[in-house]
Image 1: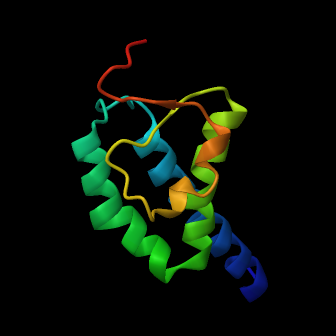
Image 2: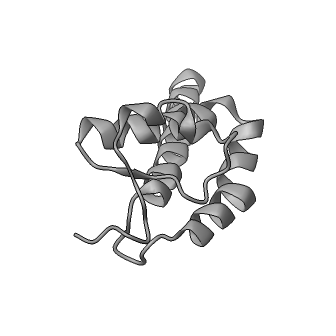
Length: 104
């Protein structure tokens, strides 16, 4: 693969990684666990926001996570997410639910 192709793949993967981490964390639950305010606070504080702060491509993915939920009509659960987190940039586009109160 040529260097420019590898760079494009790298960008796509970092964008996807940022989006996936944030989107799964602001979802009510995943296949592996139910998210709570505490698990969201920990994930954003320890992993998601520090990585987004140092990598603009990852940050773009994090920013897109709430828009993804909005496009699919899914609620965002932001309890526990820091007020300054990049995931909140487009959060007004999706219905904000409360993780502890939501049941599907």
